[in-house]
Image (cartoon, rainbow, N blue to C red; front, top):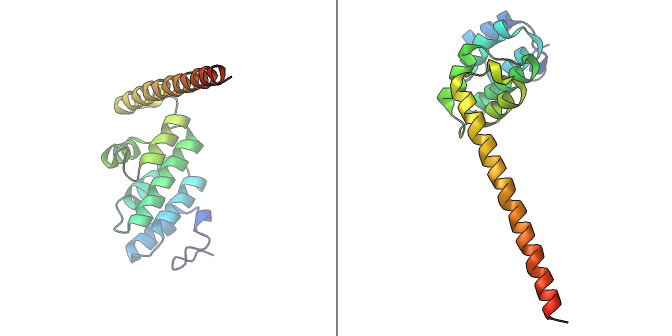
Length: 153
């Protein structure tokens, strides 16, 4: 059913007790199992296991654990305070970058902690400014091409 050595079937993991036992045994692919829990278990049951998976020594498995955080945000439209703490500790430039983006996309503004609201505002402003900059570059480029075309006739 669940192959901890190869990771086969762990995205279907739906029993937090099985994950706990695998954690105690020091099994591989615990981050993958955390994604399974995020997909198939209530957030309150999956959250403590996902938090533990974000602290695993293997960087790849920690990355999968942060994928589980993003998955939980997508499916539940919220996160637990512990998961928000994990995101904040890892930061937006680390393994948590995609999970933070998912959280900002799928969790309503009113449910975000203050630090993520600030990040949301800064990302929105930056994206708007970049959009204006790119549109102005396009307009200048179009104008320049028109001037060149008119002067080379």
